[in-house]
Length: 395
Image 1: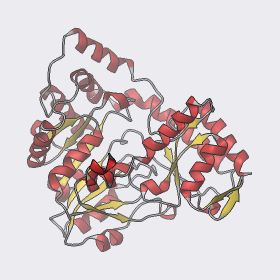
Image 2: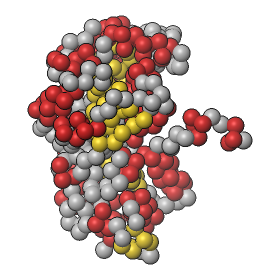
Image 3: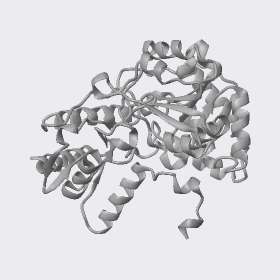
Image 4: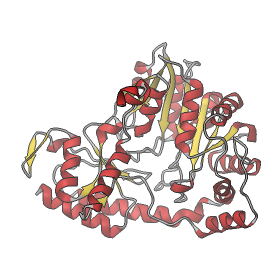
């Protein structure tokens, strides 16, 4: 029956983060004590003030279809948030609320990309960027980086990657999977290149903006020459521990926002009504209200860096945001450990799962085949135990 499936779905890769999470769940069901460091999901509960807003919405009988692009009150609140946190001036007609930032990104790609267009992906990049480009029948072009330059690309690399077919470039800061943050100066240098190519649009994924450790992220659309060509993507999943609430949104030129609304109207229509009402309270709240999570993530980051730094072969940088460690593990390639030959990061990640019962994600999925991604959105106890197991296997 698989022969009846479309070429589109047959050519689409499975999300490696979700695949590893599924494998970890499968092994847990078999009775294995798996510690999962594979998913980017905070282990905190949604803050009570947001839950209270959802309960109030239920009691007020919010239960009907919502406007395709989101409640007007929520879009107003998002405009307030953009001005407060990012110094970006958006109007409600430039905002589209979607079922998670992933749908926001997919909407933008679908309305801007044609078959044969090229999308530049500074690597490492979030796993779904390339798949979303593929669904649009566009071609994705990786711009490589390494741990030696903090996983950031240079203006020269960007310039060299641009062709007449380049239509979009995706930026993500703080970055998943590396945790790196582009400074305002670095973004302005990249913008200076893009100013020469007015046909290129920029998607700026800022979902991790509030999870930073002293280095405040800068919004690409805050560069005046880039404002009319940039789509700013954000959401509530990471900073507010609301992954299952599925609220993402964009700020964009009004003609792009209108097109995304048209696209969404034929696929999912409006986002969940209760989640939207709770989101109003969340986006209007001061980021200080979730600082306790950020402080805890920073503590965990420091613990993981300290413990991994004591294992020979792990090459580390210091991520300034998000909640991932992205070590270069190429020192293990070509070795045989526990009877298993380690040819690449895929083999290394499977070794950790099968021998240490620790789930990670291969960097190959993120365009960085020499690395693995480890999420520290888990308890300190789990993190210490996971690294203890890894050390025992590798020793």
